[in-house]
Image 1 (tube, rainbow over the protein chains, first blue to last red):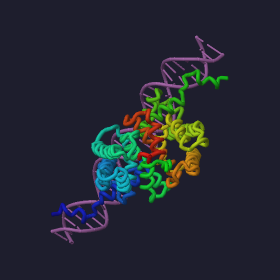
Image 2: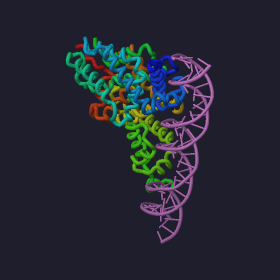
Image 3: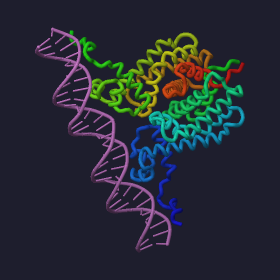
Image 4: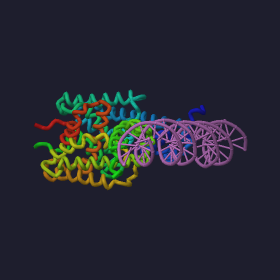
Length: 191
Length: 191
DNA sequence: CTCATGTGAGACATGCATGTCTCACATGAA
DNA sequence: TTCATGTGAGACATGCATGTCTCACATGAG
């Protein structure tokens, strides 16, 4: 049946386009549709055939980011074991998506609370639950609210992604930097 | 001498315009020049008389942000006393500027490393020096580089500002949240 | 009062990204 | 081969923010 042979034709790899767009937009959030197309190695016309417009592209990126976050939450099994270990697994699992998340994190500041924040709400709820679990088990301090810890995790992921992209820190240190700062802080532990 | 009487006329309060613009642009980074003008209570024409264009406005905001950061560094006396106390004073002093910094922090992602980063470089140097001082005095751990701690401070300030603006956390908790997470981390101290 | 200055309102042109369309070419199927 | 599909290149119109200009009004100085 001919409708199953798209991959045989010169069909664009939609996922590749999205990831390229994510990389570019993370670096320059105001990049043109034409620049996005060039970066993906396709023409503006073709890009527009796959994504009705810039809004559609951003929406697709948002859906991708949500999917990757939820996949990372699954991979990290955030319900199991010590909460701090779960956080460590989560940051490790989410690291490849950090650039995309950094883009979406700032982009969402201008979407005046609309659309598909059901997805983000689900993710937020799971993160909040993880931090709350850590508090209830006595691992985490209780004077920092789970909501703030969630927000801080987003912020540190974005900061880390940018710092890596601009060469201010090494990519290999990404997970260690974020996890250690988020969980342990800058101060030396009293010994 | 007539050139000293601007304030007597209907002259616009430049600082008020800048701060209003900072507040609005923090919330919606793509706000129009017209929206900025309306928010400041002036017309678009008058706004354009004081700031040649959007670039000039952003530059002025950047200069304001740099000035406020350096003022905060002075106020906090980051060279004196324990480094952790200095960080605490610094975050407290910089708190009123956090929204503006959040805007500039993301805006700078698209200025492809140009212009007046001499100002930011000076501030970065002072922050790095502060964290390094803390490491050398044994207060801060040495496995987190001063560059990363600086980046993380920016990220947490931005996250905190956004979280406060959107009502996810209380404004009164701002300094405590950021300082405690940055220095102490989420994990309970071993006792 | 008279005049100069700063402002508001609006018209206007410009630049630029976007969205749409057409046409020619390349590739794979029949 | 012939045909259908997906693509690239380019032209074109549109929308929107920007930048510039003019004119009328308000306020304070003289």
